[in-house]
Length: 104
Image: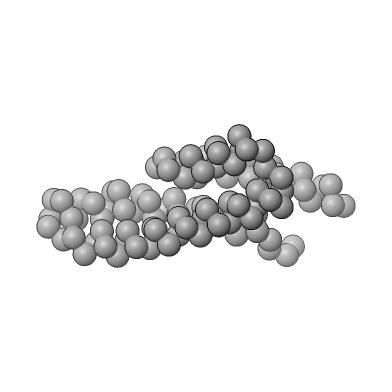
């Protein structure tokens, strides 16, 4: 099956979630406990780029799959909570399956 915006949104959501966890659980302790601020700079920059990409893909997926404002807001807010994007992935799979069934 050909990849589309929802597939990339799910992938970036997963990677962005991992980068958030790395920032909170690895880079921040390295900075504040061990005095290694470079870890936050590197991981923080990567996380920032991934977050921006996540938001761009959220807008694209919301337009293509006609997410409600409530659903779009839930996906956005979930990205601000550690592990949040992992819990919304099930709903994204359901949306994708529904769209595939409608197309066939």
